[in-house]
Picture 1 (spheres, rainbow, N blue to C red):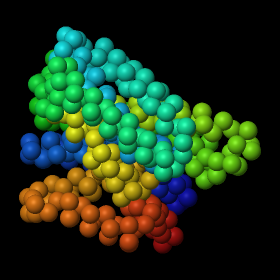
Picture 2 (picture 1 turned 30 degrees about the vertical axis):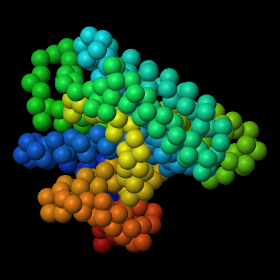
Picture 3 (picture 1 turned 90 degrees about the horizontal axis):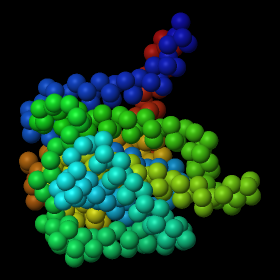
Length: 324
């Protein structure tokens, strides 16, 4: 009897539990916590997008925030400067701009590997920060763009903290499903092979550079989605969203949650957001210290991140109970 249920429960149980948590819990929370949960969801999309190149292709980027910012700024400019209104028109244009920038940056960054790739991605994102700060008439400079309207979906919606949350949550579910299809496909398996041994994959006839280039663009596309949802939620975007801090935060979330899993960064986003929230209440001046200490503690005790250990515990509970 146990054999008929334990495998599907072990495989899909965590996803069902996470879906129920994200769909039900926020409706029971006060307004300010709904906004915190929305921020958590947006950063989860951002970190999961980074996991495609970091966890699966083995590319460590310090410039992933460039695509978060490009998507957000393109969306904001279309809405506030160019007079577009429809979500169904603005979003594809903003994502197309993000993909175009990623295609150009990929041609530059993927000419090198390892540490040099990290440094070039950092330099490219800082270049965008400089452009945004300098081009004040268009981007608002250091103050950024604000009063960004809520999404016009073509139907009447009373936008508030809970409706904005569910908008972000639906975006997360769709993006997660699409990214899961990518990493479970033959293309995703090839990326894992490249991560483990590029020379072996080349010897087998794979175009390693092209695989990494496509993964880089796909990763940027979903980072752009996170940036777009962020502008709708915060109604403001600034150069900070293109900078080093954002990229480092996404890397930290991936490492903390467990890279190469997709749902590991989701767990990392939950942990980081909760740590930040409680630190802002009890230790507002010690947030960097708390964050750094949490990261060191996690790396020391859980070097592969939180997700693999939770998966192992879950499987032990399911298969262990089946044996009893």
